[in-house]
Picture (cartoon, rainbow, N blue to C red):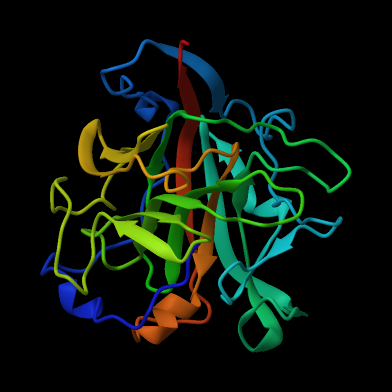
Length: 298
């Protein structure tokens, strides 16, 4: 997840009333969107959630740099990821964030202490000695998710290169959402060593994407991204929200990507805008009905 500058995001919260905790989903809600027109598509990856455990051939609850003790925060948040925090029922993976007792000392977390445990799904290597579970170069990736509502939670559905040297020149954020601001789904593309950005929603420039301005936390929605040699386009429920197009060599990612979905807690971005965790005992969950990738038939 790309760190963000100080911005007045809180002022953009719409008068939607207070949000209560989200209910857990059912398999009946797992309806997929048809990939965007313009290509003949082939389903290359399909992770759905049956039974009570992850399919270890498709997803890991830890990230690429895991050395046996899973993964701590990407953005100086409060969370340490644990396999126990991915809980599967009714055809849905629930990524559960709750206080961690005792806290874990880790420099990756805020003030060097992880006070929360949370859930993560990725197609990364389960350990540095193992292969990536799934990577893709070009295609349409989609996750069906229901967002948490508790202040302090942060949803991320994103992609970085599958690089064993941990060098990430590109990043694609299909979803970034600050819980409590349910009408803004940040969708971003970072390139040039992640020093340049295309942002569908940019509060600094007061620009908004083409997708509906509404409460996205009240139900399941389909979030997608179409990455092709000449563009990166972002979707919600089949509607295109924004598109970055370029013919300049190197501006469009050309490296295989790995996928991450995780529930962060009190990231540096949230602290910078003053929208932090107010209840240190709060719990919530991000619900994921599926993760799918379609690739063009070449």
